[in-house]
Length: 325
Image 1: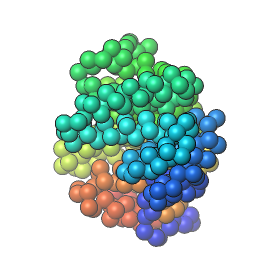
Image 2: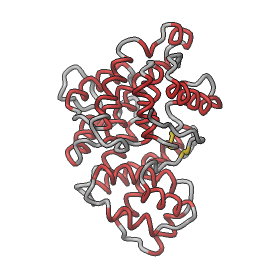
Image 3: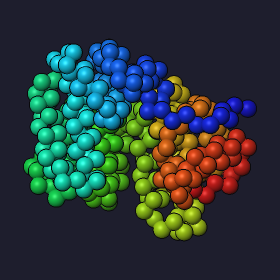
Image 4: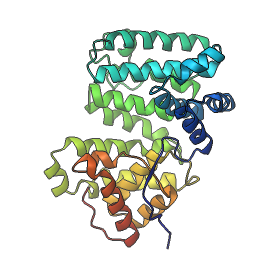
């Protein structure tokens, strides 16, 4: 039998990435040299660079560590892209909080993105950042948010920004998730259409195979809870097959090649659809690592999320097909 770790979940934004974990912990302590080295070594791996800058910026946004770095080495390219990332995070947070500074922060973040795109023309991160900011323009007042897709079934949107990111890094995970999040916020029916267009080109083993699972969780959250539970959403189509196909794709690659959050979505989908043998394999790959999502989205209350995760893990190990969430 495959062993699943009985210990409490470990939530760390670096997940399986040991080098990133060191850099994150150093940033939290006000030290930036390991981050500088990490970004320099990942410069040629654009997907890894994108994911690492995303995590590092979320940590740096809560401190003044980048100001200290800037005083020591103001021209470092890693510092420049992290500053842009942090500005985007601040703009998104200010809008969410309905801050009077939201408009100014958004403008400054956009300007920083466009400047970074000029300074580092081969880097997908500035374009991913512009996709992140696109959700703030729900009326599509900006021309770059009214571009036509190559697929006539999809509505006008920030397709040019996505194309620029993917031209630099065709399998960029964050770019696809930013576009999915955009449609979920701006026009939800287009989210499923976008994923359906993307999926045929996703190679086996790619973490993008988990993209449809995010649709299923979004459907569950927006469906009246009683309907979703009574109808046993996860045992029905398309949700059951989404979990099955994602598992088959993941099985074609190294178990820890997917981010922890994608494996968490996969573990949940397999457990909830009573595919317990497969769920055990994913929980085993996760080991002690976990992400808050999707458990916090599907739990009855946010404070019950970890309990739901622990229950799912225990039920998967026992092979009990009693999942309802």
